[in-house]
Length: 166
Image 1 (tube, rainbow, N blue to C red):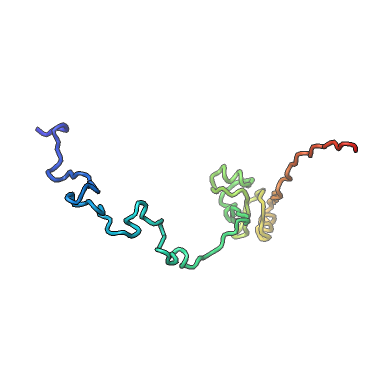
Image 2: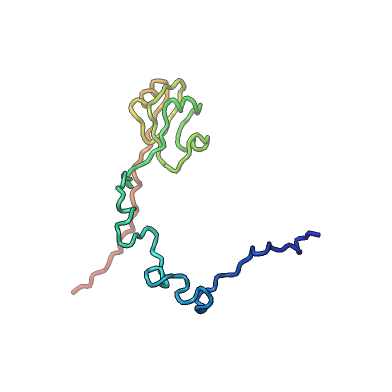
């Protein structure tokens, strides 16, 4: 009867580890399958990834593309037509995230003027395009610009050091 404790591997399925450097008669003695001299015959013979033996590697030969400005400010952008679709009376970044209408790590909101607006909404954002501002106000809404100015850095008062009289 076939049971888990009586299962055996098929004949020849299990092979032992290759034993290197155990004399000439073993078949893998002497150079132990590493050939004669050269980089790969050495103890730590593999070069790092991308190394091409001194030739300029591919990652340096291929031209680089693009530029990423680390000082740029990134906004979550929303069109005026989206404000109409969402049906919110008061629109701000917090409200939009709460209503799951936007997602992302950006902390700034910009309203773009694409589309039309038929509802009265109060919009609080960090930036507006001129057309977006006009469309919101034309529909009877209110535009509030949130300041993006950085908070002033609080500095500790320097300790007054007493000068010794000479």
